[in-house]
Amino acid sequence: MDRDHHLDAPDNESLRTIAQLDDHSELSTIYPHPHSEWDGELISRDEREKKREDERLRISLSLRKWFLAIGLLIPLPFVFVAILITVTAHYTNIKDLGYLLLPLLVGIGFAVFGTYRGFKYGYKIFYTHGIKAGPFITFLLGLLLLSLNALFLLTQPLHTGELGIDTLIISASVFVASVLYSLLLVFIWSSPRLSSARKIALAGMLALIPIIATVLLNVF
Image (cartoon, rainbow, N blue to C red; front, side, top):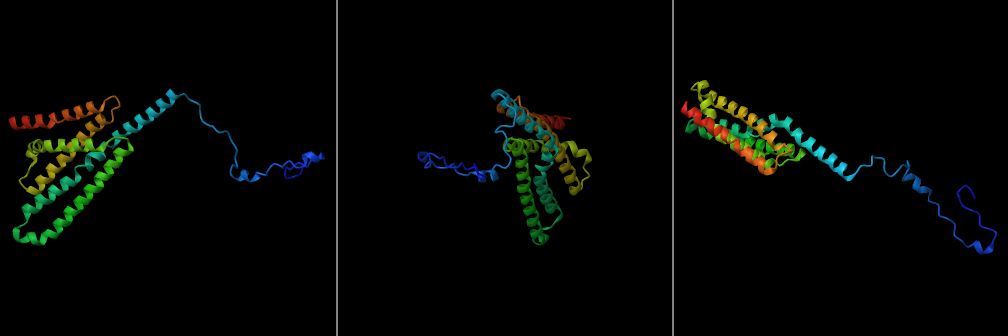
C-alpha cells in the first residue's frame, strides 16, 4: 500500500484487472469534524410533546407583561384624532378653517400612520406569543366605546369648563381604562385552561362593567 492508500496489483495475472478503490479524501473538507449523528437526549414522543406544550405555555404567558404597552398603544390614535377634531372645532372660526385645513389634514395623516404602525406593532406582539390579535383588539375597543359615558360622568367633578383641559382629562381616563381592560383581557387570552369559547364569553362579560358603572353614575 502506498501513501495514497492504493494497494499494489497482485502478482496473480487474473487479479490485475480488478479496479483500485477511488480516492475520496476530498470529503474530509466537507466533514472536517466528524461526530455522532445524534448529540441530544433521546426522549419519548410523550415527553417531546410535553416539552413543546410547556414552551407554548411559556410563550403565551409571557404576553402578560405587555398589557401596559397594549393598553396605551391601541387607543392612542383614536384619542389623538378626537382631541384634534374637538379642539379645532371649538377654538377656530369658519373663516380660519381654510388656513387650518392643511395642518388638520396633516394631523389626521399622522394619526392614520400612527394607527397603522401601532396596530402593526400590536399584531406583532400577539403573533410572537402565538395569540390572535383581532378578537382581543376588537373587544378592547368595544369596551372603551361602552365606557365613554361612564368615564365622562366619573371625571365630571374634575372638569373646569375649559374644553381643552376637559378633553385632556377625559382622554387620560380613557388610557387608564384601556390599561385596566388590557390587563384583564391579557390574563383571559393567555390562560391555557380556557377554551376559545370561554375566553370570548368572559371577555363579553367584561362589558357589564361599563354598563353597570354608567347606570350607577346616572342614578347617583
